[in-house]
Length: 539
Ligand code: NAP
Image 1 (cartoon, rainbow, N blue to C red):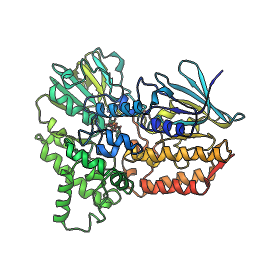
Image 2: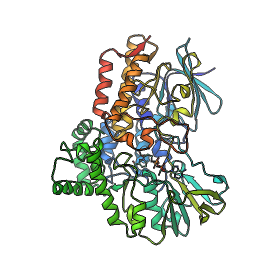
Image 3: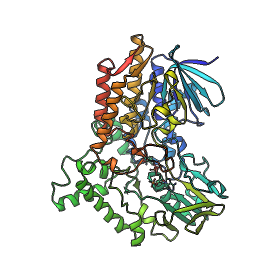
Image 4: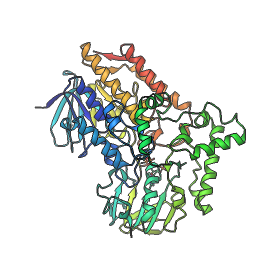
């Protein structure tokens, strides 16, 4: 006999917890299944040294609880992982979320029973549960991927992927764990950059294995004083309202001028100012056309390249650290703190895998072009099967026995990034084609969660028991999503935005996000709801 609920949520991260709250508020019975032993999602799993977000802390928290807003103090402009995990535990305790969350439980299978209009989920202990509504809150960056390098299992030292970094580190959580150790880091995306900065501080030696450099820019973290925090607390309403008005729900707003219409001096001064501001201003607060016009993009790209050259002593190393195949901001910009200066330290070595690829991993370390780098620890910062990976890892079967993996084999097809035809009552928070996936995530998570909660309420009120997109509406949204990408320079670069993961060659290159701006996405979702869910089939 299955456990029976009104709604089942997969994942107890930021979105899963808030979805639990909103559905419980409606008096529904809700169960959350979470693979980890605690709440937090990305902030539970990513315990690697240096992990912190690039969103201004006070824009990142939940806005729906005035009590939490007033009770929680942020200590840093960009909070570190332990603080964010603490924050999410604080919220979970305050709202007694844990009583409806089953931890250490992975959903392995989800099958739609058309006759009963219910989902049956199978858990990794073999038990099952049923509900009319199934919400995936499993995260866009959760299904981590390891490289396909020969000999990877032969390494005799310690190793971890950053997204499954051991809770206790390799002998402690701080950077002292690297003292006296020879450490290798593979991968130099936003995660790799954060790890490298920390490991470089104490390791005997750090070898960075870099396939592709990124256009990193300074984070400019710093403390938040109690006076500042008081001011933030008094102004939360304005802060969140401002976020809701911008493209990415950050406080950074694109400048209305074109990079091409100002004088060289004015442009250089503006870039310089942005480079020294904290957070994503250099990306999302820059001239509006740096993300859409190749010539405008070339100008900021050249500026950042000059910055890298000025910060790295060895010209050959500097050239290795400068991307040559994509422009600034066309992949996710990693924010850094003294990242480039790490390469001026005697204990840090950069191995450019474009020149000397990894041949194999051996018990002693990593072998590149016959050179052996002997290591005690290998950290894989090699990324994720992004956006669709966590859904793919569940065996999801919709109507008529259709598999989600088959339906999305050539790329996802959705309406509003919330649902896909043939899989009624399955909602995909922060899923593919969803405005929340290119956003200051908690801001857009709240929109996603509230839209789903309102939809469930609407169905209950009108006695509907099934909702799914019409194929026409799904086709139209999928085309629209591609059009939003074509209006930007994102397709010019290979990245997880474009569904590219070199460790999973079966993944098709197709745009995964929604690039029309979160304000437009929000408006589209509202319009659909106001028009009795136009484009969706309700029964
Ligand atoms: P990522 O951006 O996908 O970077 C993975 C890195 O590993 C890339 O440098 C990649 O090279 C390299 N790599 C992958 N497979 C490899 C292989 N077989 N051999 C050698 N190198 C390999 O992943 P991520 O750094 O974990 O970041 C993912 C996303 O998480 C970010 O874009 C961001 O949205 C989020 N994140 C946020 C924060 C924050 O808020 N501060 C911090 C960390 C992450 P190629 O690029 O050439 O494939």
